[in-house]
Image 1 (spheres, rainbow, N blue to C red):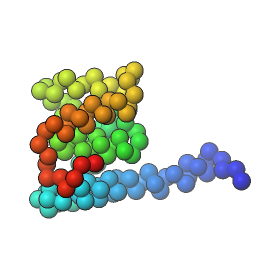
Image 2 (cartoon, one colour):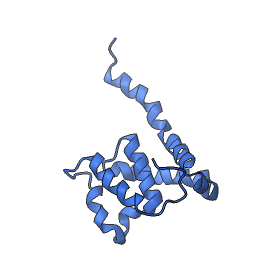
Image 3 (spheres, one colour):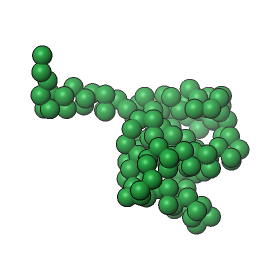
Image 4 (cartoon, rainbow, N blue to C red):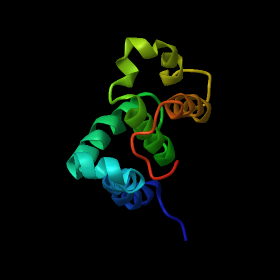
Length: 123
């Protein structure tokens, strides 16, 4: 059996379309106290804001996008524009010779050194 590229794209679309809702649910499950404080719409807005930003910086896998969203929870929704965090900017460069995995490792490590925003356990 052979699946054409067009068929593969059609099959992938529902998975891609469901990602924001799944990411929001995951974050709410991992941060229940924060979810109770701010509500589900705030997590939906975080995902809507952060998902395209993550992709812009070359983070395209689901795990990297979710970790980018976690970095946003720790460092702030516009951490990428924060002058106090200028040292992180090289790790946001999608054209970097560093792999997305390494760049996310550094960003996530920097975020985890901040106090947790009400996590149940680490991701």
